[in-house]
Amino acid sequence: MMMMGDTFGSIGSSMASLFFIWATIQQIFPNHMKIAIKEFLLSSFQQLCFAQRVSDHFTNLFSPYVEISFPESDEYRYNHAFSAIETYLGSKATEKAKHLKGSQLKESKGLVLKRDEAKVRDEYKGANVWWEIVTSTDGERSYKLTFHHRERSVITGSYVQHVVEEGKSIDTKNKKTKLFTNNPSSQWVFSQNMWRSIEFEHPASFETLAMDPEKKEEILNDLVAFSNGKEYYKKIGKAWKRGYLLYGPPGTGKSTMISAMANHLNYNIYDLELTAIKNNSELRKLLTATSNKSIIVIEDIDCSADLTANRIKKESNSTKEQDKDENAVTLSGLLNFIDGIWSACGQERIVVFTTNHLEKLDPALIRRGRMDMHIELSYCTYEAFKILAKNYLDLDDHLLFKKIKSLFMETKISPADVAENLMAKNHQIDVDGSLNNLIKALEKRKNYQRSQQDGKMKKTNKFRIFG
Ligand SMILES: Nc1ncnc2c1ncn2[C@@H]1O[C@H](COP(=O)(O)OP(=O)(O)OP(=O)(O)O)[C@@H](O)[C@H]1O
Ligand SMILES: [Mg+2]
Image (tube, rainbow, N blue to C red; front, top):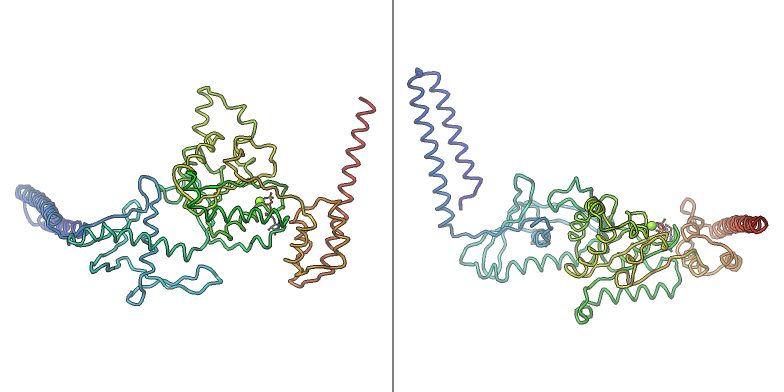
């Protein structure tokens, strides 16, 4: 079969020959003859091009081969079939391949050898097909599938579907959780490059998460019910999605809980940085490029963009405000896109918002149905401390626990600060040393909080006297 590259190659070599002949003629012949020869050469070249086009046309007309192209993106949206094909072809038997690629994507896992060839032959129900990865001049990649036209019905009828399903199931089996972060839109090329990703290897788990055990159990059950809820969501006619709002002071485990969720469900994380997005249209593009089985996270939503309670007061229908909305991510934009994406496209998606200041958020953003579960992560309790003691010191009980328990009742300290005190210095666990450090930290904090309280009381009394 004649390929496009061959056509350009032959026209190119014909042109090179013509230029060479013309250069020779210029040196040998007088001027009036040069003009005649030039005209002759030009008309020959035009005829040559025409003949080439006719020949291409006939080659295509009579070629017994059919081609299907699977571009990496289609109409500015990522084509998930492309990655499924990539996985399927990468996994095809490596024994016969002459070019292999070795990678170790998780340090804990072994080395994986994959086929690394631009062209791959495959067989399906007795039909031969050829896959080739091609890159256009503007950098767009696509997989080209070539097969004989007599196999058309089997290839379009079931082979293509088989490849995509097989690729997706291999992906699910070997899925390595990924953490995606959005790139600034200036770096986007069509729908590629919107998100950059790295392997997600965070050790957080629900087991090691320090919080009230009953609350933890409730969240875990909710997550598991969600991930097994395909049929249920279909039955009740609701999009398969769930929103969690995590709120609480710094260092109480909001980000840690997101990692534990991703590890537990084996979902990817899309960490959406709203400040890198110029407007609602960019936000929509980013959200539609996320895959199923993923957690879309907006951390510190109160600081991410102008989405706080004041925003709604500022919003008006004036043209000026509408212009502003076209150049910004707005609360209504965020709500529309989240509701839209949840109900229109994409399944099995979790959206998580985190905040240190629940009171600053607009009620519309966090209403039930959008954020199905509101989870408060609070200062460390004695129950939570016991989980940290088990994690860091491998300790279930200790004489000092009683004292620590009473101090927890009088002091506000984040699990992050408790963890810091329990952490082994130079990797040597020193139970007594760590617990005493914690007691010192708790007492210091207790005194500080008491002096703050006293200061406040004095101020109030002063106002009372002068008021
Ligand atoms: N509930 C917890 N259980 C176990 N470890 C915790 C918990 N909370 C905090 N930590 C420890 O403290 C560190 C910081 O916690 P994390 O980043 O999850 O807090 P955060 O609530 O997201 O804080 P911020 O509001 O500042 O983002 C974690 O790496 C973890 O080691
Ligand atoms: Mg955090």
